[in-house]
Image 1 (tube, rainbow, N blue to C red):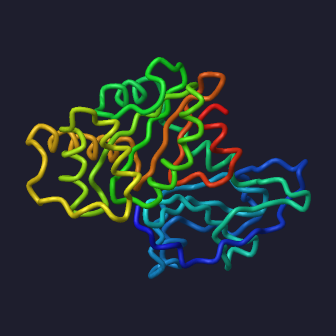
Image 2: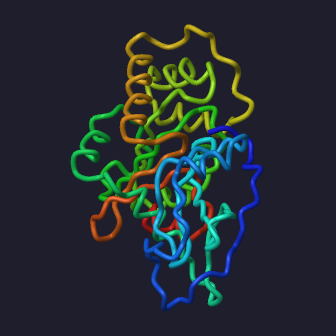
Length: 262
């Protein structure tokens, strides 16, 4: 995804107590539709894509900004809204579980099989049982940060990362990724590209074989089919075998440890 930061204040809201579970009950709240919220956010670049579970009295919606999912909450008065995570006064995160359920919905064995059939570049132990799929663009700074963060986990040998190259950021993305696939050792070529991120030479517009370019385009189409709007997008299985999905760069150490099996 683009390097532009979201120019919207993310509010930490003191909401329901830890004992009051999130709910979709909004009977006492003036009804607000997705189109109304979208209209209110016109000009911000945020696109409302669906509803989100919210604590009682609030209404929740899922927004997307430059490929990153954002929680949007309508206040109990039905006249104001806020963008960002909601916490109760004990510091309990009321937003992340709901966002995760939205991300995970629609992903099952069939979608996992589609990832297995995609064209990917393997890093780490190819025999490791833990597999993490990452849709990534060679020109995506967030993908680069995720790659850097993954290295210490890869060195431990307990995980393999299957990077699915796509071309969604720049006209340079397609030829650059195609050249990597054409290399004798695509994994090594990908690593070299990441190590020199930001200083890699501009590729020739026609670089890369026709076959590799077709594979990159097919990966980009798969990314759209699976409902991802930006890079990086991560799919992995948790310790219980459940399929988990992350849209965007996970920044906190706990999430990275969960993804890479630390």
